[in-house]
Image (cartoon, rainbow, N blue to C red; front, side):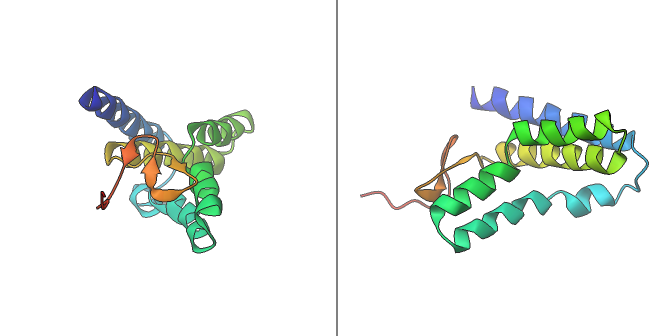
Length: 120
């Protein structure tokens, strides 16, 4: 099942690449901005609850869809591009095993534990 989910995420990532290619931006913008949604991790400097909220805000597909639909509705390529970057970044993270965060720890995600977790 895990491999099937990773294939699904890879398909979304490739679709994001294709959709980006239909916009009028130079190619290097895509890799340059791909990791920008990780800015949501700054909330962990405050505490895990704020960190999880901000991280999940930048890594939720509903937010990505809202941004992309806004761009489509107003024919704004910058908003479309932002939505595409969000979708691509989320898929890339999920391929790597990083999911939405719970409030207790950065390592506790909806996909399971990440990192080197010390078990009792």
